[in-house]
Image 1: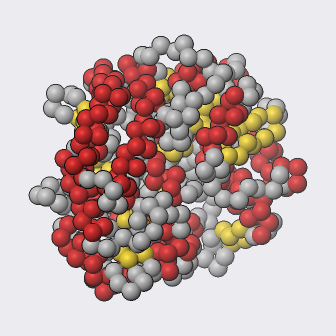
Image 2 (image 1 turned 90 degrees about the horizontal axis):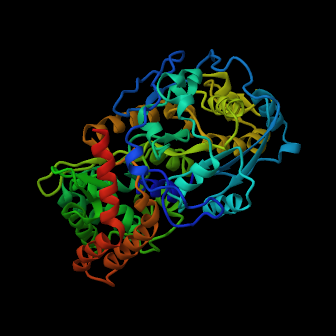
Image 3 (image 1 turned 45 degrees about the vertical axis):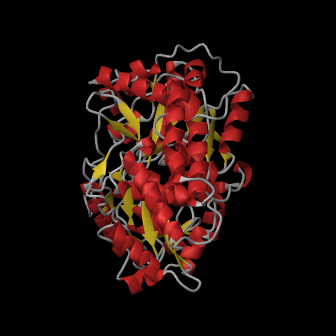
Length: 543
């Protein structure tokens, strides 16, 4: 998945970010979603117990870690869930598209395993929101449709009520045990699929920890590594490594402000005040202090002199012309740099304290969305839930290996360490299809050695696991996750874009820092206050 999309997920809050309007869905849904969403009973959490990790997960969001590939895989789905019918799925891929179904032997095997004739409508990044809207406007809704929280799709509640199946009765509480792989998802995963007091789809799990700076250790070696005790030391180190054709940081200022706001103790998207009211993180003093610090970094000349929307920061990071880049989480930092250069083990900046405040690492939403099901009779809906249950097969199962790598000897072989490696055929036939299917839904995230390029895979798992442990010590949740705001779906897209533009203007010297607070005072009257009230109402009713 592109770094831009994953990073923007960190600014999303709940189901249905706003911008692009959907047509053909109606608009008669009563605006009571924020109240109803507080009352839904989430599915029971039943961890998958047939595969034991080397490094255990915990309830705070620490990922399971696997240092080697299991010699003996287990089966999680006893028989094909499908009924032989055709099903369509609208999803997004983050790599090259697979060979078409008609000429793709693996795709045909997937159909047999699932017991369906699968048609996949594959969107891309950027462009998924346009693909999504065009498909919905066409009137022929896919059987399964992936709904991301951050890609500019408005009126999700209306779409769900008009066109999609309410699956609450099938998965709420212990009912989810009929689908064991879905039951292995935590309540935090399911919360993002709750709208209007109903559960609408299978989540797409993602690492629980959030944004971090990942650095090239060769750049930071002269400054004794990418770490700091306070802002002054971090600024000094950035100056020390900047020089010649090397700059300490990428020029995506809004990401810098986001990560560094954790050091200044800014809340995770919303602060819940003592009286129950909510304050948006970017209007807090802590965020303003972080933005002022970013301005100091800019004035010190430590940002790469490029476009604040640059797309090749990872390449320049591996080349050593940029010292650190913001990643969605520690796993992506280590993996993505390994992809660029297998010999580079990315360092992770653990948030330092600033201004006398303890740092607050921001948990991610924990998902990249959820996949809803088209309305149908109970038999059809349950069959589609069975398909999603298969797609959510966890690491260490035969189903997961088949979906990710295909058939041994044709699509992949095991290397000397026992890790699967795709062949040319596998890259052509399996990789793109797996990308789309795992976006639709997948198992809870785990750190798996085989996902890292290079020869130090076990070390990568241990290092990222250790970084997660440190981050979780000071991690805070977004208090509005699992709650719904109609105003959020209506206003967030424009508000976010305007805020990003203002950050770029302030750091770029075109506007003053003094314009930041008035901007948020104005937005309070343009929708932000309404968002806060709706979220507050939902939180209070669920207490």
